[in-house]
Image (cartoon, rainbow, N blue to C red; front, top):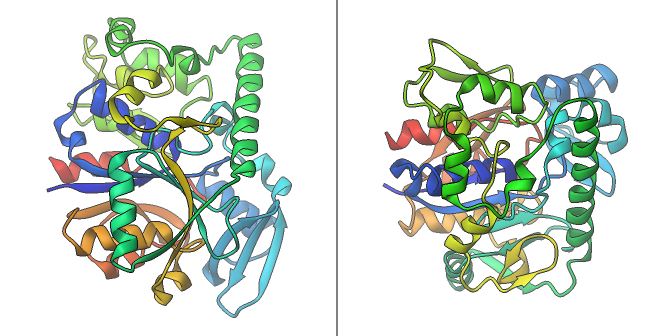
Length: 363
């Protein structure tokens, strides 16, 4: 069985390391990766505190979240709209996000966001031939409308800003004794990454990534653990047993330890000749679902849900690994039909850990 995987940029990075560095067979059966634009994220408890404690809005009353023009836009079930200045959320942003260099999910087959497209449309960056084939077939079958996007200036701006801010934060942390080094390993080969991880273990992961405030809780380490003793608790990797001292899988897998980005790109991008600061790509489009139910439930044109709906209904994939809201708390799930997929539509804005579920499904 083959699946699609929908995730944030850090989760896509983790998946690519599982596929190409650790060469996990269960990870190679992902037929399609869709990455979501991400400037920053929140742990659910912090996001809830912002919405309920600071602004007095019951999360259970909320129908939909969005981020537009520097505002967190909240639509309540009764139709009332509340806008919260995005800067009010800064104290709650995960410190881990501050050393992330990837805004536009640069290692995905398809990257999706909203900036640069008209209201009600999704911005879709197609990076691989696989992604382009699925997009064009979904358009041909009437699942989506597609328009070429000529000037992705805001995508360029936000990607550039995120890289600059992450570099500045990384250099600042070095002054305090924490070296953020994954961005320095982009040009290393898979074999060089493996060599550097030799002799390392979970203790080194704690010292170099977790205690340095670089762990994104992507769950790659947990998914890589062949003993099943490494879990994510309260957004932090924790051991539930004794880790063999000669095992380095969690350390090797972590995309914040090292990320051989160039060699990964060489393995997945063949005709992606364009690069304007937000990763290699073939072309960029504005995309809109044609299904009114998808448009109502999904985010910014519903491109993700519509494309995945096409892939599911045509038998291209057997399921989708993504996130579902449980009163806005993110829960990793697998969707195997249109109804289940619609229940995952929309953006939650809180961090999640879907990669261990992928391993469980494939095992």
